[in-house]
Length: 222
Ligand SMILES: C[S@@+](CC[C@H](N)C(=O)[O-])C[C@H]1O[C@@H](n2cnc3c(N)ncnc32)[C@H](O)[C@@H]1O
Image 1 (cartoon, rainbow, N blue to C red):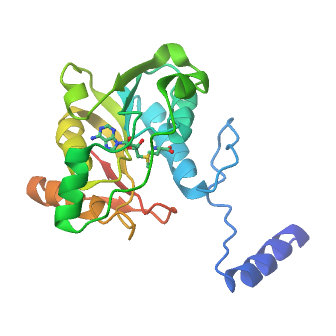
Image 2: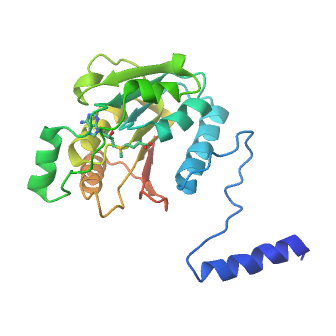
């Protein structure tokens, strides 16, 4: 065993006792280095899915429902530099209608404030702003005029109703070989994501893969 391999294994064992994990498995071949981000697994998995989409020649555009300040959307825009990126958000935080469903069902309080953002702030951080189509307002109403198909979609709206509506809108428009990431499936703070995914997937015979990122994402593919 080489010295570097020995050190890697020894350090991995010590860190694992503290629930800290070293992994080389995500050093996928890619020219893009990852931005410093607390959710390494989520961002790396996006990179791996991007490579599959490109290698298979999957057509279609990309979208995120729940953009907030655009941290994940920025990465999507950087990777998929030649695809249109639809950005769906109120840019003013949760909508009262969704919060009511959330509270009545006991999923979450829906009281996190996501209003400290703006379209201008998000767009100023995008590497390819000319590819972005901003859909400001209540989703799914803002999707009514969208006729594209999609190869990658991120559903990160936290609450039951917009997540379910996101699946209803995007799954039929997902290209074969495309992916939908649904954040918060395994997240105790937002308990609405899981029943939304289960309802749509059970009713439509769809399977998914949960990943151990910090938000408890599940991934649907077609
Ligand atoms: C957790 S944040 C998104 C985080 C973001 N993806 C990131 O990378 O940091 C959730 C966002 O979903 C948006 N949202 C929730 N329900 C919505 C709806 N029905 N229509 C539009 N936006 C919604 C909120 O305004 C909020 O900005």
